[in-house]
Structure formats: C-alpha cells, structure tokens
Image (cartoon, rainbow, N blue to C red; front, side, top):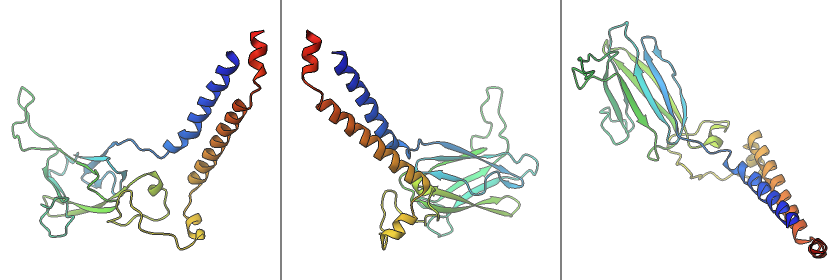
Length: 216
C-alpha cells in the first residue's frame, strides 16, 4: 500500500508545481498613495494595474492653497463625463468638533479613483488646478496585467483589457516581444509537464507482481 501512496503523493506535488507558473502573472488589486504637495505630486507618473486604486492626499499645509484634481476623459472641458473625474477642492486640513466630526461636511483632504473594467490600458493625463491659478500636470500609466507592464513600449489609450487586435507579421516579431520572464515561464511549464507525464508512465508501468510479493 505504501508503494502506491508515495508515487501518487509525488504525482500530486509535481502537478501543483507544473501549474503554479500559470499563476505567476496574477495580480492582486492594490491601493496606491499619491501625495499632493506644494512642489507637486509625490509620484508624477505612477504605474498601476487593472482594478488598482489611487488615493490622493493633500499634504500642502504650507502654501495655504486648495488643490482640485481633474481628468477630462472625453475632452469637452467639463469634467462631468462618465469617465471624467473631479475631486473638488482638497484642503490640507478639515476642522473637526469635539466629537471628531467635520465642521464643514463638504471639506475633503483626499480623493480616490478605482481603475476598474471600465478603464482601458494606456496613459491618462490629469491636472492639479490650484487655487492660485497655477496648474500641475501628471500622468497615470495603466496596464492590464504584468505581461503588458513588461512590454518594451507603453500601451496606447483604447487598448481593451484581454483583447489583442494586433497580429505579428511573422514569427520573428513575436519572438522579439518575449521577455526573459516569458522564457522562464515556458521552461518551467515544460519541465513540470514533462515530470508529471514521466511519473504517470512509471506508475502505469509498475509491475503487477509487486503487490503480490507484498501480500506474501
């Protein structure tokens, strides 16, 4: 019995090892912080992935300015489209009473945007409209997954998640697009699959008389 259980256990372990590389490119949604400072943003070009969020905090408590973060996705200059955003005036501090309740309910010090399935990968420009009339520009680079992030060129706005309309003209172009991580992934998958197949064949070819000898 022991000679049967041990090979099966090894078989299961090798199966898990061969499948694990497929999960290497998976990404867990995360939240990233960008500080709004007197000198600009703490990150002017953050790189994030699909379903990530960015939280902006106004930490500019020295210039006595308010900051308004806007993105005009449809380009009409109104910031009221379905994918536009407008943070409203962000203050460095909101006065609170003895119960820790904001005296002015409309006062905000932070702003958050989740880049969900409605957002396609690409570079998104946005602005900080300051109360003194000055403007600070910044960009968010959104990738659909780790493979897209490792690509040599940035994706263009409008490239849909999970959709690839560009077909390589020949095999040379396709190979040039592969990264070292891709090569290691394929090697690991091939080695794991070969080990699983080899162990399966050994189990199937196991002599039947071994069980008889054990019983004797």
